[in-house]
Length: 115
Length: 114
Image 1 (cartoon, each protein chain N blue to C red):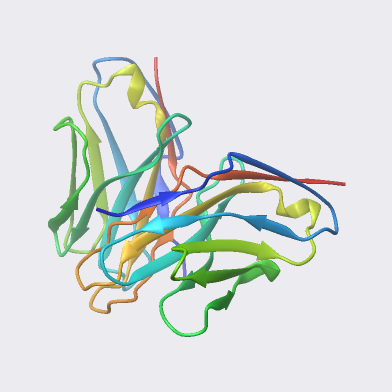
Image 2: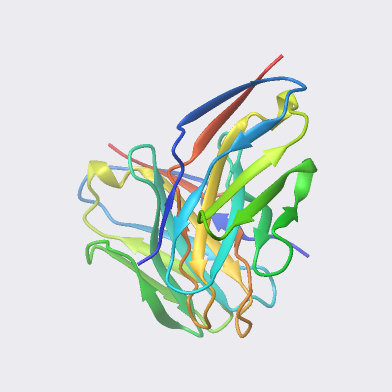
């Protein structure tokens, strides 16, 4: 079975400060990890993914995520937060094996950037 | 390239009715997955189709069903609607045949059951 935990329902950050949204995962075998963002009344937009290689992954809108195998974590980060980053963020995992399309999502973290 | 489209965007039904939602994947994508999003349960996987065959299924009752057509378009059907079926239903498409294919999501269909 695969699972994702996002321990914080809500994260508040002042504009211009660095932000971190936490994610830990559990999966059999090698993980395929994602971050998605959702704005009000919209579907999910892809931010970034990790398959293999460099543990620091860079994505859209200046976001990056750090894969840590020993801690089974994939935290989302941004050096300087913008008010427009305020949204709902989802971490997701699936096992990296052929034929498995099922994504398991965390419960989401609502990020609010305070002007 | 056009993204994933879902119709209708909004739907209001009453308990006991049935509903059909439609999803058109990105051109060339052969895999379509469906998810239900609710405030209480978050995002939950419903099922996934490839080449008109259901490949994976989540833990939902038999009232939830789906199908995929030869052009990869997919529909999901919910029969005997319950209040708890009110949710945002998201469709996602992906290429198939590679181990690292990613899913692209549509805008969703907001279903309200009264």
